[in-house]
Length: 355
Image 1 (cartoon, rainbow, N blue to C red):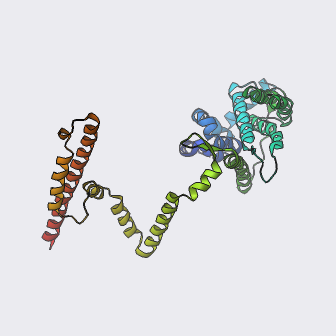
Image 2: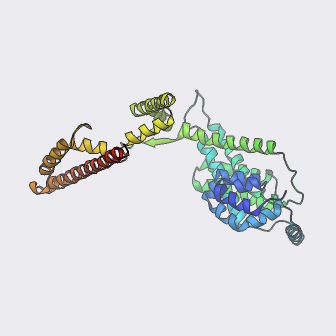
């Protein structure tokens, strides 16, 4: 069955930033790149796809008009012409993947060993990023040329670990692929089974996420209120043991137990009541009254606090501002409880009439 243009656009809209429309069309490599860069470098590729989806669908369906145009293009050019968009894409992905590889290597000793020797994998990550973009669609190329260029220029980065040297390595790898490795993909790729596609995509995703997890666990830091850096894994460990998290975890557990005993409807009713959506509980707190206080006690406290916090009784500007805030808060609390009183009267009257 042919691929649907409408469904492709729907998938582009709801999950295109994660490459969902590319996976649907069988463009797994491009879909994975969209997934790991959030739509082709923060959504730029995703926005560009809105104009290219008709070509993608025609390619997936092997429409005669599209195939004829591709054949004419191959005859007109011995090798794919230079594309600024593709070259920039190779540079960006090569830079991102090699940077993530660099960040994932632990800075300190782990289990008593230094892992800095893993820097030898940085050029490999760079070349794989370049190769991945270069092999999208009807263009392909060998991994060896970008790999050789990355390793030949990598010593410059080891000698001078600056962004400039890092960029030189990435650009050299992309240039080597574009000049030496790039060629037309004249044969249609052999289609893999859905099971094999899912297996390959999942393996690549796990590898990519493992690099991010390594960075977050070993090298990522948080800055506290005193400006000191705290390793992220230590901060998470301390957070799990913090009183706030302990209390929250206990509250969630108590809610679950209550729901098992009383049902989810009753639990939801209790949640709404405790959430104080109408502000009654906070109003009682502002007036420093019990929730069982009658209307006479409420009115008496409202008059007393209104006199106490009236702005005209204060002359100092700073104290006057504070008194004004307290005065408005008291007035609001009194208004809420007064409104609640009217609602209760209406509810009781309605109940009496029904009887």
